[in-house]
Amino acid sequence: MTPNPSQAEARTARTSRASPRRAPTAENRLRDAERSRRKLLAAALDEFAAKGYAATRVQDIAERAGVNKQLVNYYFGGKEGLYRELQGQWEAREASFAGPEVPLETLAGEYVHAALSDPRLTRLLVWAGLSEEPGEPGQRPGTGAADPDVEDLRRRQAAGELADDLDPGCTLLAMFGAIAAPIVLPQIARKACGLDPGSAEFEARYAEHIKRMVRRLGGRPGA
Image (cartoon, rainbow, N blue to C red; front, side):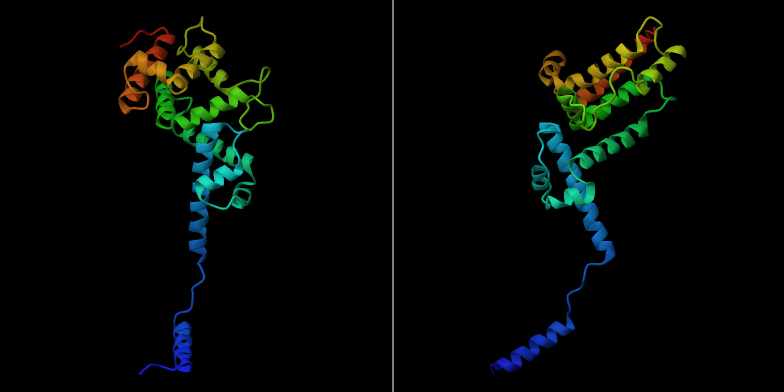
């Protein structure tokens, strides 16, 4: 027998009362928020690495992440906040392998692995250098400011890790250039080494070679 409308409505009402919609729990809301933050950070790194800070739009980041662009302001306070959060992530990663007790040659090899395992971070740094706008996030102090990396090389030089006739600042610049070269000039790296600079084989070979070069900067030929 086909139920009349009043019977159907009563049955629907009973079903609705028996299965109320559950509001998301605090744990679920926290999980969703963390997921959105991770998506935005990953998308921002992709966009900044591809276009640079100035040319990247918040809308492009949000679309790549698949979230509402208002969440950029909500979670990070805007595009600059996203950029600085990425800087903080890199600094935390750097702290995991860098330290004054780590030999210079080992440190150089670790930087090669960090750069080649995720080239976006180096591209982001290159974009910051190409734009070099004083107000852009990531710009470091210019002349007149003591650079902690240079000061660390001076300390290492006094300890015998760097030859006395080498300038610590110029040495630091040369090391940065060597580490970034396969990412900035992949066609040259491919031609010179006969390997894809994005391959694990190239990464291992290049890291080992940079370590040998740095070892010689201290006047220790080694193997």
